[in-house]
Amino acid sequence: MSRRATTGPRRRKNVVSLERALSKLGAASRSQARQLIAAGRVRADGRVVTDPAKRVVPESTRLTIDDAILRRAPRRLIALHKPRGVMTTRRDPEGRPTVFDLLGEAGAGLIAVGRLDRASSGLLLLTNDTQLAHRLTDPDRGLTRRYVVTVRGRVTPEEAVRLERGVDAPASTGRSERLVAARVTIRKASNRETHLVLDLTEGKNREVRRLFEAVGHEVTRLHRVSFGPIELGDLAPGRWRELAAGAAAV
Image (cartoon, rainbow, N blue to C red; front, top):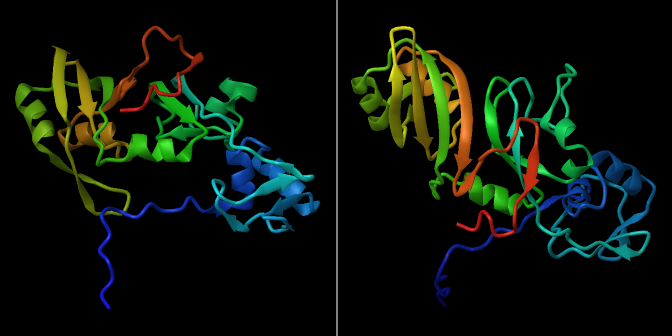
């Protein structure tokens, strides 16, 4: 007997560790979750679990703490104006400031949607919904990220066309990787420096800096002003605002 063909892609279950599930549900931080689990206060489908690495599906596994059923926290999406010099990590081993230091208690349960490196500034999105984060960063969706960029030297119109057609740049693996800018707009150019607006749709590691390095220019300022339909606007450095639940429903 032949199997019936499926009509579409099968949806993958969101399987995570128990400690991460508690964090995703907004019940506790990862460290707090480990303490609760070790103390035998957490049950999964009615059974006490003492292993924080136990794999569960937050959407379907019945999770309780002290017999209180955990419900998924309302979806949150935050727009933060990340200043230069701030790390996009929850904590930094060198003690440098992080975006979660800026958010304080408001950052509980949130993850960054993509990254901005320490020397970059501008719009950073954070959410407690990992599926939303994956949708926003999925290269197949092609959401546009817009950057205001300053580089050393004069970028010529010919070099801008090269970036839009694609360049080969070294990757962290040691191999070259094809990078393509969706759009490059030269605002002002001199022999000293060039100011540009750059649109990207793939979100690869250090993509902006590697693009310009491939045509012989060093990025000296990198500032993200929009991510898909969400704009930084007049949000001040270090400040953040809560977005409506449907803000990223594109």
